[in-house]
Image 1: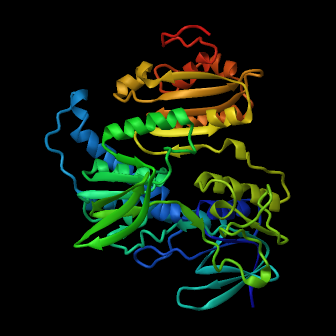
Image 2: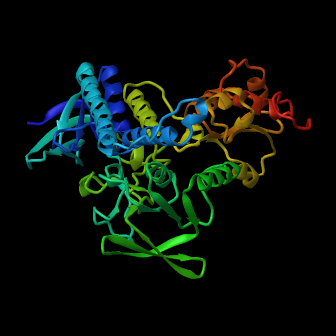
Image 3: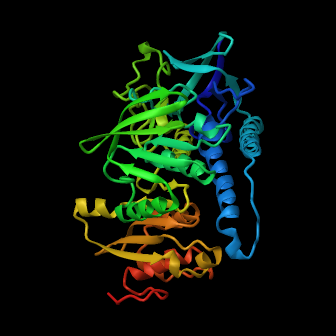
Length: 477
């Protein structure tokens, strides 16, 4: 006989586990099905983000940044460290410790909120049933009034670079190298490629990044992207745009990468090659064919603005639906759906999803880019403030980058905020909050910011929309 619930969630990543917890908080009898196992073959909640994505990559980014600072940069602060040595096994152990603490934390949250956890692969069946196939093959049926699909995504593969798990690897394996490659190749110049390339460059690898597109970071504001390309190149990342990989062959422990650049055929030999060309939704075997769940040709589940699928009382959230594959976007969708099931009003503002690249410098933005405003024919004013003029940035010894505010020329409403520089992952939240309440650049300009802080750069960029920035010499507009 099937166990019965008000809500069953398939997937325990940032979308699924947040949805399950919020449903339970709202008084709904909730279960969450997840198949993820850690290296010890034990259940590990949190999905890709906590296990092999957001969290471990940020741990390594932070650790590798400290290592690089100890060797290059700490001396200017009056701290003399001689011959700092890399202990890669200890770094990896710390990464795993953080991951374990957080995944165990979710298990604790499930217990304290009364969420029933089921281990195994969950599949949507007809008549709002979920079939759970445990890792030992045993099957169990769950019956639910409402079902939330949140099965996440996986790294894409490309025929020209077949993974072998040793020399040609995906982003997951790239988080667990047991030694620093002498020369590392990365296919893909997006967020994942830049972050992983940065980690291993800091630890001593020579990094060649091959990006098929002719432009760098096309999803970001063009001015910010150009600044990023300049700074990353200066750091030593060898970024080659318009480089389309044709084939890869492992020879004598190295990968011979053949790629097209303009009309020229080029070759590059690397010790390790990371394929970081994007992700696809985990929707194979997510639903039985007789449910007639609608997917597009990429496996994306069709949903409306409130994440309702074509099936009654069945919802889909996170990486398996439209929009950017970001943990925080999936979490907010999970909360929205939980509130909807409980009979409350809720929505997600898809126009104000913050995006962050956790390199050094960090890149973050929300709202419209300058190129989008031009394409849409919207008149706008621009305010820019460089971190080189920030007292706090100078105290940190990190003055690269800028904050850029775009405001409607007629209404002065802020339409987009883009930044590159120190701690932008934290600063961007100020822009999201301000824009959520329909702020104008004048509102930001007359708001008092603490001094000395990095956030003053947001204040000064808003002042600069009217040419009134205090700490830069610029002609008044």
